[in-house]
Length: 116
Image 1 (cartoon, rainbow, N blue to C red):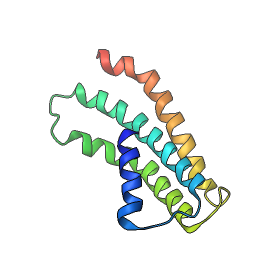
Image 2 (image 1 turned 120 degrees about the vertical axis):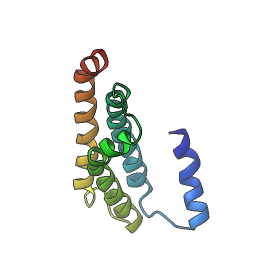
Image 3 (image 1 turned 90 degrees about the vertical axis):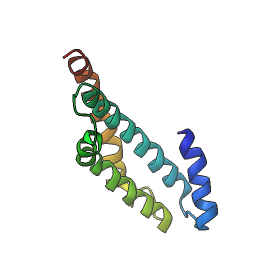
Image 4 (image 1 turned 45 degrees about the horizontal axis):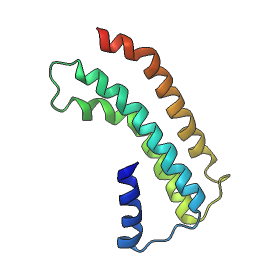
């Protein structure tokens, strides 16, 4: 979140873009961040137990993170175009469901992954 506090204002300043629905944009950013952190935490735990750690994170995380990235991009596009929360509801549902699923799965599997 600290990095986002620096990069998002820099994005607006350097690219001189305007967001027409700031509330939707902030919601998408927060939900996307929650989804990314929930998924990457369990992936990092899996990789920490692997013997060959080189490019394993990128190979494992790309297919797992793709749904949340696509939804976050779609929600951000809707926010920049001035769409309402109703217009972005499909993306918001995915951005809400994804962290719930990933964090729940992580809670149940973390002990098994870490101890074996």
